[in-house]
Length: 508
Image (cartoon, rainbow, N blue to C red; front, side, top):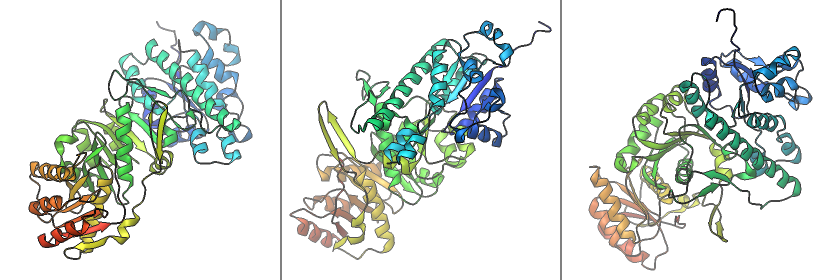
């Protein structure tokens, strides 16, 4: 109707984790939202070329006490908590306008605690304004959409696209529940620290299901925090499942064992392709090894993914892509795949937060130290065959590291920069040898002159004999068999270089 103005919707943004922020804010702007932001969030939006209103412009007060007080004001919380348009008519004289969407994630208290921060560090990481805004928005889910994590950005934008710039009551209710679970865990972590509690188990984060749909599952995070506290940011796709998380951890730990850029492809926690090199080249080389098993797999990188690698990934069916960074074009392309979980991994933080391994069966728990480092690379002993040159040693080291991450018994065949065939999880080592050879031959890959690594010793010469018959020229394996001398003698007869290591890397 002419002469009737339509109120512009308003979004309030105040985030610690700024991954995906600009893309999400642009989506909000596309749907007509006015952007209001605090501090560093406002700066990030402006630097991204977006118009933004500073919080202090609507409160009339600047941030005080070094940013401790920014959003605790009736103009903010009244805008969030107002129940409907009629209620705002009562407070229009106070300058309080409705806020329709609240985007907040919290200071990383859990991460600071996990990394042994000082008392002053931890106090600084206790978020006050963030939980207050989240809880206010969640309470008013009948009108307000609350977005507590970048993992929700894709879903919220999809709803806005589908419903003419609005969200459904079902989504608002679900996100509100996520907020109250989040703030419960966040506060529990703070209380535990204040009380000196180090071993309390919280209720965890509910996962869709466990290894199978009939099994319930939960995820436990340090200090009751979020994925960001373990260095992970989910940009798009479905929520992470139990199996996704198990595979993701395995993939990132493999990629992190290499200093040079690499690509690791895993299925059911086992590597089915690995290569070093710039992302697009490493990806292509890794896919040669076992493209059939790579279908629906996890693709982990330790270097930034560029547009060339993203173009290949975008054409494949896969579950997870994880990397330390993405070019803007690569991230935009990959997040368009709605069923693919795209993650950024802060590898140093991730490795620190996931150090050590535990297994639990009800009340029985086992815990062991992390299997980290490869000091044995410096003291491999030549047991048979010609002395390997530097390139051969480097290729064997690659296979050795990959073998560490497959289920024992593990055999990995490599050409120096990439895997050719992998045999994992067999009950006898010779069966793993046969499987690795069969996998390589199935792809038509050349094994003459290739290299092999084993995660355990060869109890009999039969494994070496089969490798030699396939054309393998050098092998590395741990020492420790009572028949090491017999195995070495047979390798020598076959002209195969055999290096023995002082350390093994079983993965049961």
